[in-house]
Image (cartoon, rainbow, N blue to C red; front, side, top):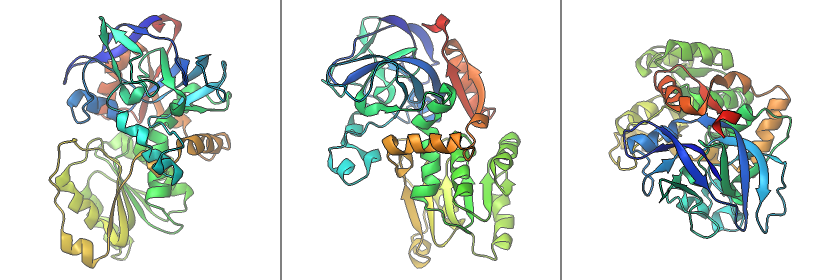
Length: 375
């Protein structure tokens, strides 16, 4: 099938809309007509090199939702016509991590940056006669994709596609960062650093978990206003401003839970985040740094003597096959505000505009809405 896709051919280059060829589904795979794709910061990390794929060209996109139009041999639980969301980490259900209940750490995740299909190690997308490496084995910045069943989650057909696509990464990651990794409890105080799509989802997770105070920290005034809209109790432009008030509000205890959801985490800032964390509290680092970054500033004595926890997390420590439908059920019940998280909608050819808006702080989440012109 000949269609279009947003590719990058080298680091620090803009996305290029080009003709691509997408193959037919093989055993265990489905073909999906994409309806919406989220513009997540992680795809920008591909362009900067913070997340290096095995090679170029790269087909971007790891948040998406659409309709199954073809099922390969052996697929018996997903049918043509099903509405689906993608999971940026596949879950096989059989590896040691999956059997232990940690499906977000499925062994299939080892191949996310390699680009070769789960089914047989070959490639499903080509451009200019070359194999194309799809982000997270997905490549949702195209109006069609072929993907393994382990990356597909069936959803309620009444859910809008632009809402469903957010669950592929950002919402599930942020919400789980609060409810699972941080384990926010009723009455606790929570600080969230970085108010983008993941941060707003973490904020809503803290609200639904019964947090007392929710401190939202972001340098962009509009994002601080959005944080209040989604349930934050206090907002600050930076860490220094937060330190000026949080000790008084918490009678010196600080925040029991701190969740870091900035666009790119820097090792020199970790000690500041832990200083904001209460005794025996937990600081969850959801944000990504550069894959080669190894230097971290950390007061080891304070970590030990105050019994603090520094916790990494991926995909909100959750189970996509379970969590994505559950979170969409919360949305249907009016308890999770996903509609207002979609700030702007873009055409495929406007993908660079979407990332410019993200980097300049104008979006909580931008979404590509595919049309017939894209196909």
